[in-house]
Length: 294
Image (tube, rainbow, N blue to C red; front, top):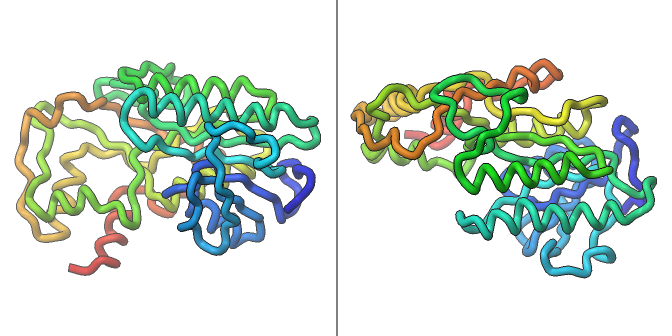
């Protein structure tokens, strides 16, 4: 392990702590290792991590962290709540973030990470009635999921450790085939009261975008991580149905209820030099269908 952080831009290897090394974080660690960095995957139980990621078994809410958190050149916070209730969200996106930041903020400036990327969610925006939102749009969360995320973002951006927020849309990719399975089974339903927009990003692009923001010399505070083509949900369903030979999903007015409706723009991320491997849902789901077979 390295003994002192390395500023952004210095040659690899750099030690990168990935706190909450799950679906996206594990792929990020593999990408970092492939280019010569040293990823450390922090989980309560890191036994399932690939060999290229050093495992670190730590519960950020268990206390006594100072001696257990190693030096890090860069940090990514990519944890996810284990339950969908407000207390679980607060523990993961506020309390655990506070605990980790306190460890690094207590260290001498030359022993602190040079950047922390906080993986957030487009849920912070709430409903925009189908209109566009971007990084200049003020968050207007309509549920505890979005409001707690905003608290976590504010804590990161208010820290003396330089922070960047990446607001991801719906993440799909290997192993996440729920929508494909719904369409195959004839259980998908289109919104009945006009288009409900979906904003997605493939896991590969989510991980690559996070790595991109670790490297960017002078990043903005906030970026949206969605692909280049927000698409009405019904269009996604109908395209998938055509690909798998399933019946066209019918309309159901109930689908429109309790869904925020917005189109998220990733222009800032693309303008910073990031290029999507899967710029639309067709690219990502198309590859998944090819790999899974009929």
